[in-house]
Image (cartoon, rainbow, N blue to C red):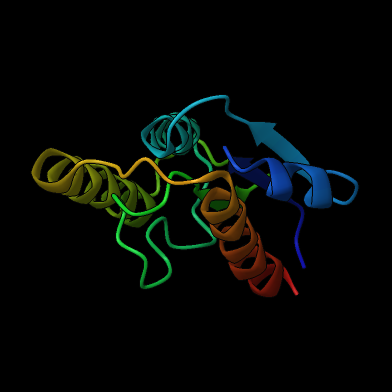
Length: 124
């Protein structure tokens, strides 16, 4: 697999993936992960995983891990930009309409595991 950058706000993804990959850890909400990914895309990086992968709605989990190319081109990948903009729009809509539940510590740990597991399998 090519070298990648992982952008995440998931402590489990950070802890388990940083020994093999560059991890850009975001202390914040999933929307901040999307903003950081969009910044990378504007610098010529490409999405390698879909920002809304999984059947978990964006307002149901506070964690998001996204993989992008480590190498960047001199041009913006329009497809990647479209995907991240759609993720931002969809997340804003769900948060506005439904809010983010106040999950217990155990449920948050479960969401960390689900998010990590999805990315782990995408990388292997």
